[in-house]
Length: 186
Image 1 (cartoon, helix red, strand yellow):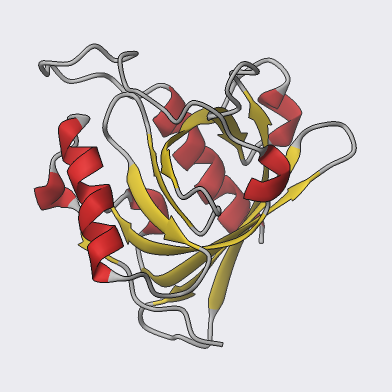
Image 2: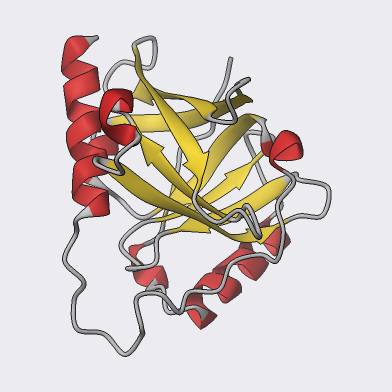
C-alpha cells in the first residue's frame, strides 16, 4: 500500500510540474465544458482509452470512484487490474477539489492529501466533454500530456468514442498516442 501511495504521489507531482513542450497551443487555452454538477459526476467511471502514462504502467482494466465529502473535497479511489495478473488489483486513494468554482470543470487531484491545501502534488483534471446524462466524459490536462475517455459502463459505443476523439483532436491532442484500455469485468 505504501509503495502504491508513493508511486501515485510521484505521478501527481509529475503531472502538476510537467514541462510544456513547444507546441502551437497556449497551455491555458484548453476549453472545458461550461458547467459540471459535481454531485452528478460522483460515482464509478471506467477508463475506455488513455494516453499511456507511467503511473498506470502495468495496468489493464481501470476504474475510478469519486465520492463528494462533507468538506467539499472529493474522495478519489483509482483501481486497476494488473496486466500480468488480472486477479491482482492496485489501488490508489486521493482527494480532489474544484479549482474553478465558476464551472466546476477544472479540478486538482492529489494522492498526497497533506500537501493538497497548498497546491503541492496536485495534478490537473479538466473535463473537456461530458454527456448531458453524465454517462461518458473526456478528461485531459492543459499541457496535453494526459487524456482519458471515461464511461459509467465498462464499454462505450464506438460512435461516441469517435465523437470524443474528434473533440480531443480539435483541442490539440495527438490521437496517435491514445490507446484502448482493457474492459473491466467483475
